[in-house]
Image (tube, rainbow, N blue to C red; front, top):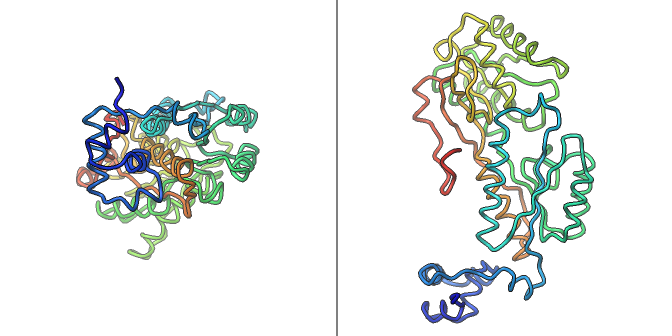
Length: 361
């Protein structure tokens, strides 16, 4: 027989209403309940094996149990990097675990990188209780804004522009991430910096560069060199351009601003006489899940996609449960994962894991 709220209430010595407020995280009522009481209720519920009945709750409240998650699938094979599924799975895993803990089900949708807004419309027509989107843009962004304005609880993860669906967003603090890369390289005594930037860089990448330059200018009064990669260059051309820039500027520390040029930078150094990391240290972004040139493991700055997914789901549930609309975006702290492209001294600067995060990340 399933344990009831009444049984939990009797074990905790409180009313059924108090148990309901705590187990459903009902705001603002739960804030008035002492922390010790909340912990006792949750402990009793766990000991008794209490599980919420999401279907009964849905019938009682009239709120749908399905939350849509719209992911982006890259149609062009050359853009579908071999490591990208791990990031997408981590993001989805963080969302799904958080939603399932609260009795919700995940309905997954996928759209192409060519602004396939019909897929978004199809997903939204399923009678969702809320929607989480990764990096919406173009017509999909416009449609998402309309949905949010019409009352659908909605959160965007890694928005292309800061103002997209503001403030219902979860993103890496990109400028701080750039600051952090500079500080790490300076800790390793690298004073001839360079950064790799795509000509069609996203606003997030530009913020990383801004943060990177800011620290070097403040500390040493120097302007880091820049290797600007044309958007129409193929991979081999980009690798050669990076190698040429290294030979020209002779950097001892490099920040690569996104996943692809992080990978290419490691290969470019193999075309020079510089050794990694003795002569040149490299810190890339979101590239800690793969090995590149000479089978080396990249040192990376970025964010836990699993944690980003969990944060997005938590933000959405606050809107769904309590109509608590965010006043400001959720800004995630940058995370450093040392690898083989930075000196061993930086291993002590590794970021701690997030509680509950899968060990394979």
